[in-house]
Amino acid sequence: MKRSNDPIFWLLFGAGGMLSALIGAALVFVSGIGVPLALLVSRDLMRYELMLGFAQHWLGKAIVFAVIVLFLWHAALRIFHMLHDFGIHAGAGAKLICFGLPLLCTVAVAFWLLILGF
Amino acid sequence: MSAPMDKRRPYTRSMAGWWKRDPYFIRYLAMEATSVLVAVYALILLIGLFRLSQGELAYNGWLGALKSPLSIGLHVLILLVFIYHTWSWFKVMPKTLPAFYLGGAKVRQSVITWAGVVVALVLNLLVLFILAGVKP
Image 1: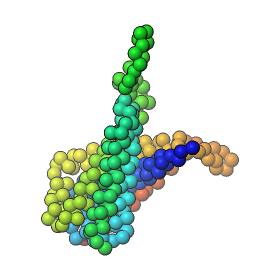
Image 2 (image 1 turned 60 degrees about the vertical axis):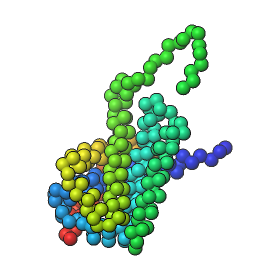
Image 3 (image 1 turned 90 degrees about the horizontal axis):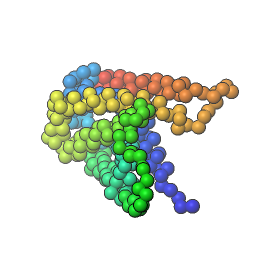
């Protein structure tokens, strides 16, 4: 039997879904509402020097990488299956967009985190 | 689609608007559609990381854009969708797990769902609490 690579994608899907369910709402509130409106959190929480320091720390890098990459893979898998639900069947184009784009973003996130230094 | 030519032209029920046929389908689709805004949020953060890598001026531009009413409105929508995602994620979770037993009795689906929701609530509040404590 040919080995399937599906489990890898389902693992990424599950990890992203779980991470976004566990802390996603808090992150959205803080970065999109709390900081811009100085609501509950400091207005300066996402200041340049602070975010740079965060992204230069190995733990910060791991968090940024996990959040962006896993959220994207989670969404990509759902969108891919939603296309099917709406009668757009898994062709090369749908696969290229739904798996190629998150892959490209994964590489980009890793690259930007690396050039930010340690 | 290459449907074979058939002289009988048999009736095939159209799938158009299938999701409106049953409230279950609507809930299913609402759950799946949360992924669109999860992707949007991840892309917003991705752009932020990119701008951060370009330096202070670029990053401050991104930070300023987050203050626009359009962005705040979008984030309110994203927040609501994330909350719905959390609920639907744990609602479905017991159906994706193998049945497990505690003290000889099968753990009820609703127990798993609520346990997940409570853990998510605690962790979200913890993140909020930690970040609210950072006073730069």
